Amino acid sequence: MNYFQRKREEYLALDAKDRRRYVTDALLNNALYILMAIFIIFTAVVNKNFLSPSSIVNIITLAAVSLPMALGIGGCIVLTGTDLSAGRVFGLAAGISAALLQNRAASKLIFENLPKTSGGWIILVLLLVMCAGAVIGMVNGFFVSKFSLHPFIVTLATQLITYGIILMFFQINGNGGGPISNIAQEFKDAVAGPAIKIAAWNVSIPWYVIFALFLVILMWFIWNKTRFGKNMFAIGSNSEAAKVSGVNVFLTTILVHTLAGAMYGFAGFVEAARLGSVTAATGLNNESDAIAACVIGGVSFVGGTGNIGGIVLGVFVLRIIFVALNMLGINPNLQYIIKGAIILSAVSLDMRKYLVRK
Image 1 (cartoon, rainbow, N blue to C red):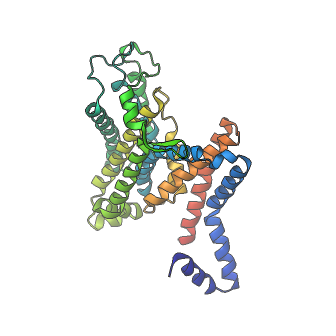
Image 2: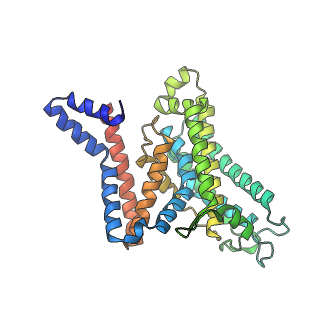
Image 3: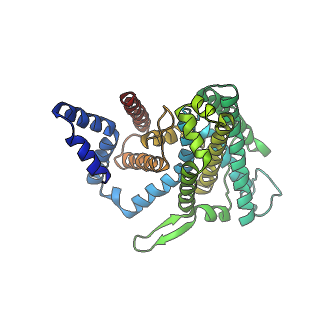
């Protein structure tokens, strides 16, 4: 019996009153998806370019940039927490990547006398920024687990600390806080260059989309097939019960945040190659998009609930909405209001489902 047959049997087994409540609950629980589907259809009717091959590829590439951060922050939400430092860690990783992978022939360099950009050097920089992100994540996890501090407070503090580091970093070698540009072409080609070319549509899929797909598979395996993943969900559901069952709550919490930080580092590395120029403001408020995508995808703030497929769906839904808003000519300032409304609606609906189950 498939999902739809099972739901049909459940519906038919109810009396008239319970059927009405069943339908009402189903509509409310899926209201966000229904409204988004209507909005997407409306956009496709108003702007014919919305579903063009180039627009679809654009949505895919934008989603691929956002996915690593959402995959990382999703684990923090499963633990009933969040991570407000994500956007700044992303920005720091982007800045470091840009500085270490500048064109050596450029007149203005952050770091002089570095090796010429090559495949090995690019991989080394990637590992470096992922480690930097992991260290910040480890600090978050340590203070959350060791001192039972709320993740909101801890990550707010590390957000400010990281931003201070970013501002000082952009002052190095007389840069004066200006953007870091002149990114080496080898770096841009290796990360943002075309991996797949679709001649019929005259579009190409960049390498970082392939990387994002690999990360999705890796994180799915970690969440679903490892003891670490099972422990993460157990702590999110009930940390005290998990501790009694032998789960190392302290270590698992640190590892969840450390893995999240590494994902932010990876995302920042990709962003540096994609943009070709990084500023101190890079990554500002990116954590809000990641949190919204996770909640839309079913990762619950009550803890212990979520899956990688839902996060991927949430990222794509959010990107589709933002692209649609631009195509409809919506004021960019208004888009922030819409983004906030989406987050508030998603969290409210999520809490409603939790209260109904309870």
